[in-house]
Image (cartoon, rainbow, N blue to C red; front, side, top):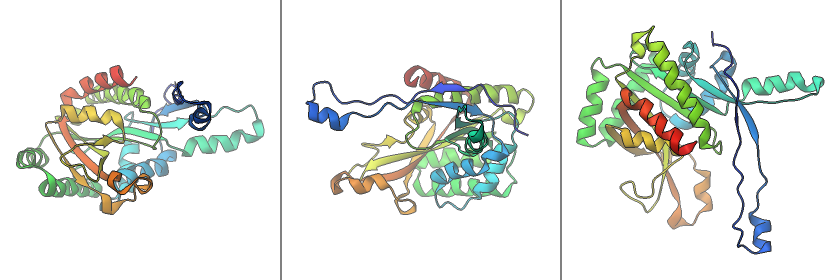
Length: 284
């Protein structure tokens, strides 16, 4: 069963406003209303199943993987990972039950670790291994291909980092969630050595201008994930334009259209704490 709710953390979405030097008319157009929201971080539970699965879908798109089974594995891990939900406060007793339903089922973000090695014989993990191997062969450089294939095929302890959220949720929420995950892994591996990972793998969502090549103009959807890339031993990306509709691209001139990519980064688990510290210092 999932553990007790984690301590709520208040996270406010920052205000965006126009330049003070703008004309009054421009300011009327540019000014946006300040939005504040409180979020609760909680351990994964059965009530979060559909919300987690939806977030996994935006990462894996049309990949041949049983996302329902992966979701079950994530929920089944005791004391590992967090989901982010909006904290709803209401003094209206008549609405309290409806509010509780919304709070229990709406997942704005999920951060967890999938133990690939310990679940290697589970069908969905076999599918994930096959996907990683296939993508590596098709898209990685020769050096990355040799390195990634080696760790996938030998007995290294591998964790797959899940770090997904709804678009427009601010990057600062990643700090408490990643910090908590690092602490949870450290605590869990003292009791279960299969969580004493050698390597971690993360798939990040990125975009590139249609005219860009070789990573020029690349943007990470979750901006903090660029720091995983900087610590990666091997990395490669692949185009997923045929698998998803990037709504934002349709609003841009042809020469500026964005192309969706996925970037796979493989890094040593020993640097995870350092990455989290860097994100904390820069993003927080």
